[in-house]
Image (cartoon, rainbow, N blue to C red; front, side, top):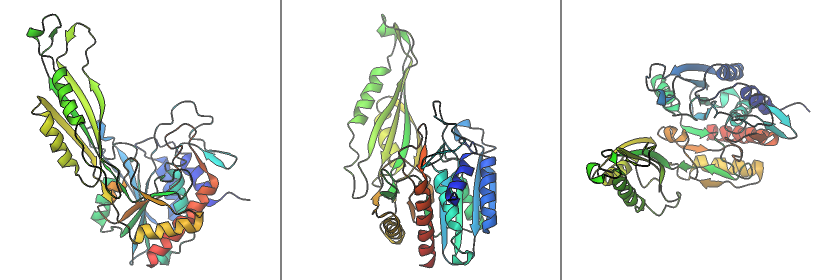
Length: 379
């Protein structure tokens, strides 16, 4: 029995070391897979002139399109991966088949899904309709110069999708058991309280910022944002760091800092949450800096989710749960353009040592993507 196209393509992509931000060889490989299938492939670098290293540039992005007129179906994903870490049983960028598993960084998150989609295209005729691939090299990083730049590129060329499927690894215990119809939003905040450094034996000559920071955090921790909704779990505020930078036992520090992370549902906006926390921090004597990573979004039940669910059940025998759990993804940006749903491989090994995908899942996923694409294009 010969290796399937999905397996061959996954191995080719996984063999390219593409730690975020990804550029170069992995995009060369991707282009080489798409051009013979009739796609026009457009690649560009974003963020090369951005002086802020925290923004993660420069980043390579790829937009590929085939077909004209009719409905426009887009598949979105990322070719960048997280660093592999030490302790793998095999080389992380030398994909290895052991039994019915394919091991290597990116197997499930998410080169395997991209490979499955490209494999499905061999069974989708060009006349079926307009198909595009929105592929970034910066989903695992700051996501400043990745999908956002691709969206601007698509707007400039006047080619926006009508419907989009993101291939993130959404399945939990078995391929097909979960799809994502939305995601919570994310905002990170940094609180700074200034004081005056001094000797602990002479507190009247110093101003300790720590008690004020503790009082601020106590107020924040008492906030209940909501009780959740039909589609979303409750929003939560988490204190993720406390810091004074004080190595001495007999010194009152001059500054105290804390970091918050809020994951929120569609009852809130990032800006409203920033102002809520600012209203606690500033009266308490602190200053606030915030970065909104993405807003919450929901694709209500409808044609996209219903078609996907029907196909998944036909292929796998499982009716997928429609969920909004988990972290953020680039769907938060694409949801501003059109209805978006996420569906992909099992996520149990993503970001872990010895990341692996079941080879039969690659073939099943390719079939799911093929049927979903054809049904939505013909609707």
